Length: 341
Ligand code: NAP
Ligand code: F7E
Image (cartoon, rainbow, N blue to C red; front, side, top):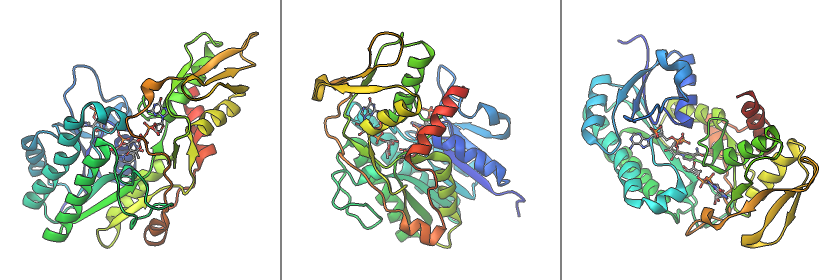
């Protein structure tokens, strides 16, 4: 009998992996993670807890490394968060995205079946599965209609998780998570990109290039990551494996995100033009009017999900999970933490 539960996290160096590691360490787990070899440091988000973690080199495209690690560690809980997680990039590298996101999940499930069939498995599924949405809001029963290589790769991963649950009686759960953000979000995702750039505007008195932005009208259900990793943990403590949506139940556009961030930063923003030529001018940054936002079509996607809105009522009822931090407070937290950095 082991005196500590052992957790294995794929994607431990990412946004969610870093917050989940902190949570599991606080709960007394022995936390192991899989990291990729990189020619430059890729552990900045977990450096503050580095000495408390057990890290193993591996890659989700390499079934041998996955199998060796699971056989060695024999985890009680596996949190599968590793992925090529950028939707726009998935249009540029669709095969690699599938190799990592679809087959990585399969390798983990096979290895779990072989070495630790009594372990619990969390699969990082995504609201991108809903794609061209078939109903609003989206819940666990809403039909899927993915429209990006990322979404399709995650459909494979979702169904493989469900198939292993049903065929081999594994405790394998899908968390269908809507967008969740924090100061640790990768810099190319829209919330982090907008907030860091607007803060740079202030710090450098407007002497920086404008924020180049894509589709201003796309709407997302944005929540705060620490709350979502708590939801992942709760899913694996539930009496049985299942599928759960985690979301705030609010949706806002990229335009609203920029407007709210400007408001909180006391930047007066005025929009001019339309479509590809739209710009945002700030009237109170220095003495002259300054263009701080510019639409740039290079950030448009070949296919776009116009709007996502989650219905998290199942998670509320069965897991007692609820997103307390909504849109405005999320932006407030991200701004505060960005300034502190
Ligand atoms: P993230 O910050 O992009 O982190 C992705 C992690 O996966 C990183 O640790 C990355 O390692 C690792 N990884 C990438 N390719 C790998 C490979 N070939 N082998 C091993 N590891 C690899 O993503 P996140 O925001 O934390 O999201 C966590 C998971 O939830 C992902 O599966 C994502 O698709 C899914 N998801 C996220 C959201 C969201 O809003 N954040 C919503 C729904 C679902 P490096 O650090 O070396 O790059
Ligand atoms: O885009 C629009 C963009 O890249 C959000 C991943 O964690 O959540 C994330 O995927 C929206 C889209 O996130 C820019 O077109 C406008 O409509 O921040 P994002 P995402 O694509 O929603 C899901 C749930 C995941 O599962 C993914 O792993 O913002 N947008 N202008 C832009 N997006 C970016 N990145 N950059 C722009 O300049």
